Image (cartoon, rainbow, N blue to C red; front, top):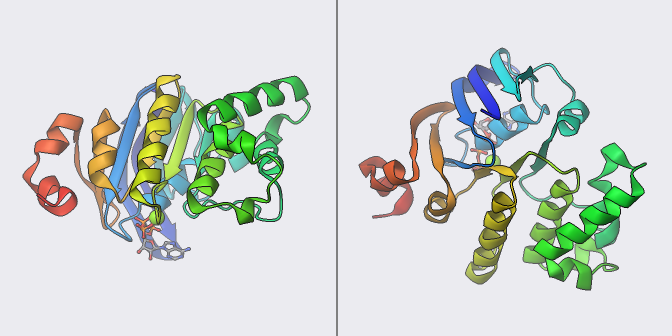
Length: 236
Ligand SMILES: Nc1ncnc2c1ncn2[C@@H]1O[C@H](COP(=O)(O)OP(=O)(O)OP(=O)(O)O)[C@@H](O)[C@H]1O
Ligand SMILES: [Mg+2]
């Protein structure tokens, strides 16, 4: 198991947002987290990446406990997050934004340039727009840049928080295609999505969160056939 989470609780002040959450992400797999607004999906990703600290439970990444590590240390181990809402630097160029994603190994210039090339192979539009300010790009291009930036630290596990949010169907299809390519290149992905039907299609397994607890876990086929998932998330 690449990442194994056992029985974590995460609080905002005194409000518990995650309760007794356990899940596992295998190496090179694609795992999706489904759930309604406010169910705790972003809280879960922010807990994995170290932005939030769990009050109890364990998180083991490649055999190493990570719950008490800083976000920087977690990035260095190989977990990288593409946050909800993208959080780009709008007045910096595409290339500047990308290079910031490699901040944990700035000294490795050659490696960073190689990774810029790799990201531009996934998203050729970023090469075309290299000197454009991020804030002037379309929503879809900005999402591609945000994913590209998260790839710049060569993650073993990429956390994606609602990459399709607010984008037109054609752009969403393109982004999902590249998410699959990234996964096929050997990067494990934890994908949080409102677009449940598309997320389940490309996932090997998934979890459903409700009010901060996991109420269902299953393989792609199990989720696709689950009556509750069908009704609540697939609209069939
Ligand atoms: N900074 C915060 N302070 C206090 N409560 C918060 C904070 N962020 C989130 N919460 C609460 O924690 C719960 C889970 O929120 P979270 O953002 O993880 O949900 P989500 O599943 O990502 O929702 P969405 O689909 O809207 O992005 C919600 O009840 C939310 O109000
Ligand atoms: Mg969220």
